[in-house]
Length: 246
Image (tube, rainbow, N blue to C red; front, side, top):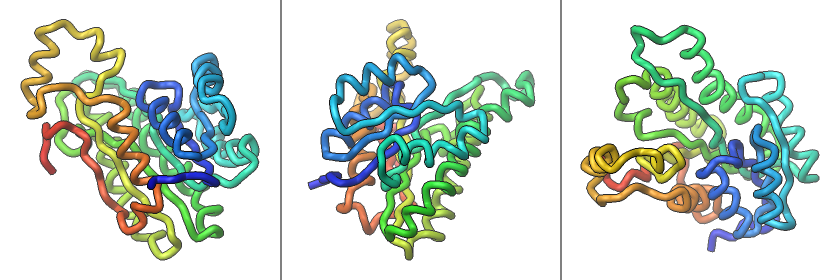
């Protein structure tokens, strides 16, 4: 079950905690994984841990010219077309809208939404020829519920959901599925830095009473990448411990 042997997957933001977990799990299920990021040392360290059947590419997702070449670069590095695209990379510049600079708004949308669109558009070409493909984008609970101080980030993640639903309808007849995973509070270096009171306030919002793990997000991605999920498209899997039951 969930065998990805013979498939090639590109995971953006693979040097981060969630991206690394996704790449590791897809690799464990037999996929050749192309590891993308900007932190070369971390990517090479992950590549070494995985051993064989992986490649490394770098690109700044704020540079749309680099984004436009990323799928071709990933295919060249792996020696095969991209079958599975995992749009995981993203970042935030938080602040109240009253004080937010236009550039801070635009930068977040460029990386989290526009780069996602460009990657999907370029990856679709080979998927259409193969009549098989998986596109999975990492959204966020705040893309559905909103969050004060994150208007730009929430808008970008909500945009990913609307974009993906529309794209799912466009390519469904070509054997390509387009789905999303929306994590809630996940254990990351950022949450590790919180004090006990801050963690208690977070956990008070989560019915299961704990933070999620990167591996739990990765498991959702693995399912969506598999042939077992072939009848699921345009869907958002909410991995949030019941924080928002949508």
